[in-house]
Amino acid sequence: MRLLPLVGATYFMVAGGPYGLEDIIGKAGYGRALLLLLLIPLVWSLPTSLMVGELASAIPEEGGYYEWVRRAVGGFWGFQEAWLSLTASIFDMALYPVTFVLYLGKIAPDWTTGHRGTLWALAVVIGCAIWNLRGAKAVGGGSILLFTAMLAPFAALVAIGLWHGFGAHGAGLHALTAGTATPDMAAAVSVCLWNYMGWDNASTIAQEVENPQRTYPRAMLISAALVAVTYILPLATVAVAGIPAEQFSTGAWADAAKTLGGAGLWGVGLALAVVIGGTISGIGMFNALMMSYTRIPYALAREGLLPKVFSRTTTTGVPWLSVGLCAIAWGLAVQMSFERLISIDLVLYGGSLILEFVALVVLRKREPNLVRPFRVPGGMPGAVVAGIGPAILIVFAMWAARDEKMAGIPALAFAAIVAACGPAIYGLTRLVRFRGAVE
Image (cartoon, one colour):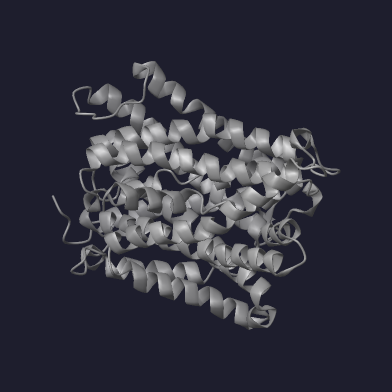
């Protein structure tokens, strides 16, 4: 995989377009939503992408963040990193087939009613599994095509929206300061964090990337810029066009497109294009993240922590058993609610992300001579400070999820139970050491 396919895949691992921003607008209003989208990348996305750029270029191993943590602080914590990432993926990956079904329902409501919606979601899982079996190159190349098709309607929406916004009857720039009648900033911040997370996911395919030492840092920075532009520009556009923030909830981009395009054929066509883009977003995100997560069991099997069969690959280098079993696990979670999924996902992912920042600092101390084609600026103090902002936001996300329930218990307690299973499972794997570890 070369630079542009890696950028395309990374973009879908993190963003998947403006889809998902609707709840931030509806819960915070335009002014606060814009502020969140501008500030959170500075304390969340930028430090994380810099950390990934350094570690992925210094240790370009298949398994990515698992290998970083294992090398820095040992096998136990490496396994916890893998466990937290894989369990978080159960709740994260269920969101994208649901997004596909949501937008498909706007095209043909009868297709997604009742059990039909679940069948469509499962079709996305199966289709992406087949796509992934073709290899990382196929996924990366496909991501570029999906990226172009998904954002084309938004280019038209932005052009029309800005023309309306600065016309005789537009709201103008002062609309960017507009709030909402019933703000829920805690929920808005959580959704914003979710929309900006996933920068480390591309690291797990390092051995399938051409010249990873040079490619990863460039891909991280280009992707970060693309995410920022494709988030902020559409949000600013619908604000200046005068569309009330209260109208925004999941799926509202289609309504905004119809409003801006007018009642005629152009408005209907633009709305339909945005809806189709929503289905593309769901597929693109699920497809790219499947490529990322399925390399973790492969890396564990190479260490003897899973059966050797997990390390077997197709002729295109894909761990086929991992793809199949992960697809089954993700398919079982497609009917959970959006809020619950985000809450649990953020807590588990947050734990794994903190371990990665710890690995960054520890490796700076233990292996000062490690070749680092790219470094987090500021020396050791810079490496330490980089993790502070993400850690604070993770703690805030835990506080914001305090009232969410899962299986009749608080979501935080549920996530803690899942995380606590990691050490026990690691102990079992040490007792039953699987044959075939790669030394």
